[in-house]
Image 1 (cartoon, rainbow, N blue to C red):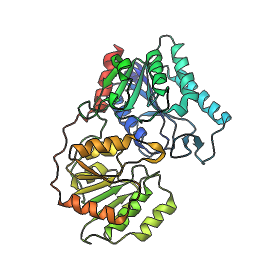
Image 2 (cartoon, rainbow, N blue to C red):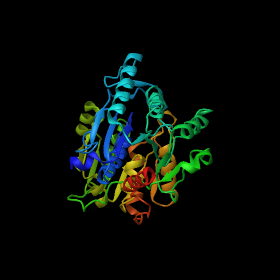
Image 3 (cartoon, rainbow, N blue to C red):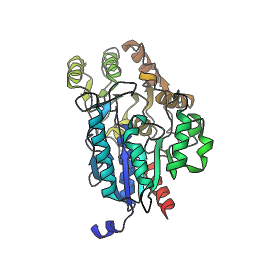
Image 4 (tube, rainbow, N blue to C red):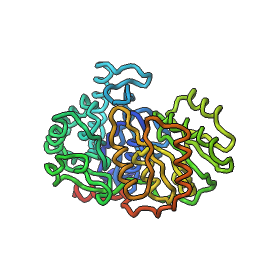
Length: 382
């Protein structure tokens, strides 16, 4: 194994999650696929630790973590919630550059940037400069989800195009163009069309049959947001027949006091947990799912015939989840509830409707994005 890694192409994969765990989960699946394809992978993480990501056996460099200081992602804070000052950010930048030099990669993958993560320009622009001065220069790829944040400030799209043209060899779009295309949320896509590569969605491998079943599963992703969703689901369970089994999954980042509050208020037919490793399997056995419309949750739902009730995250002007939810609703695969004004009665009514609806067949989308990402990169490095 060690001998084979000596000759393996080296990948330096930067991922920064600021609020939820979707970015690190997707990047970890890609990193595992790269490693399985014979690449020597180093993942550089910049957010709070998430158990299980990256997977065991993947080399990891953990930078001093930063998180979003508000729902609008306009500021950065350290892991204690204190605003990140210049000295802290300079130290992070220097650690990142040192890790790049130590890795001496053949391939650099930067997750989200330059289409997102503009807050990280303080370290990513110096990284791109260092890459350009490296001989031989590694191939550079941007790794982006299929739907981008809309309503960007004037000039941002042009800036993104310039950075892609000057520094990136390819843009890996982790989606199926039959579901949504990059130009749907990035109007200047035609200016970088030659660099776009669709990989399919990065979804978990098909899951086994569930070891236990629930009628309704309400989940909050990473748990940094979504408390209101869980509270109303908890109360909605009491408005519906007691023989319906509910599972509430809070996510690892829900504050302990909030988790305790949910536990103390739950009806007898509700099970509350922080995390279930077998979440995709549990969805296969459920009749209804209540969740936000994050990338990874939708990837799991698309492999089931569970009826989805989606409550898109819209705080801070976020649009990505709304676009995804609307696409699924148009296909008859989901119902949408607004985040604002959500009540237990509204959720209970939606669950009644979902339980009575005919279960849709799983949509035939390309969900092999992790493996295809590895194949695309290998084809482009010769």
